[in-house]
Length: 438
Image (cartoon, rainbow, N blue to C red):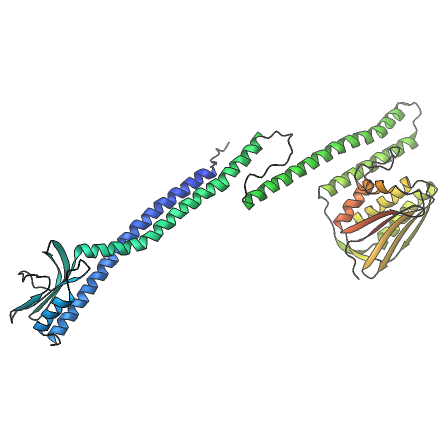
């Protein structure tokens, strides 16, 4: 026996895992974004200071800015206003002149080009120094202000991510409340329900998909109820109908002189009952394999008419048929069975009838089949009921009451409509396509 490795998970557990993954990936994304933005901004600020240092050194070397003009420019343009500003110092190593802003003193140390850092006015300044010949230019930015700038930019980038992750968690919680709870209630209702309780389930959620699930379950429950009722009725009526011929056969077999004719009639009746039961069961279960083909309906109906003529003669009924050539698409066996049931119904149940007529009229693609007798007809209130299975015109009838039900099922398969109405005298049953082509 193979072990079963399948595990069952609750939707709430999967949602919790999803929520945890959103939180973890969100924090990981924020951390990676913060590190990436910080690194990119640091590189950008460094490149900006380097380019400005190079530009200032080029202007001085080319004589565009004199030392006095530079000193005045630095004093007027760069003030310590607690904003992101620059600390600039320019020194000519050979001519021995020096200028700077913010009272930054001349300092000794390395004169090599590259990154530099100083401490001035209780702040750390980081920047870049460039030596071109005898000219040494330093350009530095307050480190705390640079960090504040990077923090502001990073916050602007990260905040939407943080808000998005928070909204995702909230939406997930709402989904849990809107979907998981109603599903749990629905599962609880199904678990508590008795097998005999086939009443409709109440709606447990306003969500359209959950309403569809509930409606589908109710449709299934209704179908099961109808099937059970049909099976109960089927078993009851079949037991009743089969009891009479079986009892007759048993009595005949117990007699010393067997009445073979009577036994043969009862056996024929049993065969007919069983055939009708099998046909109806297949049609109702949609298990009949339809063989649709184009054929002339006149041909099988002519054979049927010849086969049933002797039965009508034996019953003292005149049988007439008028058949036009009619090409249609369908299952010839089923349609022949349909007409046979109509004719046998007229033969057995047309009280007082002396004549039965089968007519097939065809006009182009339109056609109509009629079975008509001159009997007493059927009361209007019984006509629709006669189409239901196990319904007989009177309790003395030997039939099982399945003929017209089979007719209805076959007609539905071929999209045909049946009309039944009394004539003067008799009953007329008409069969024609649902959509007539004009």
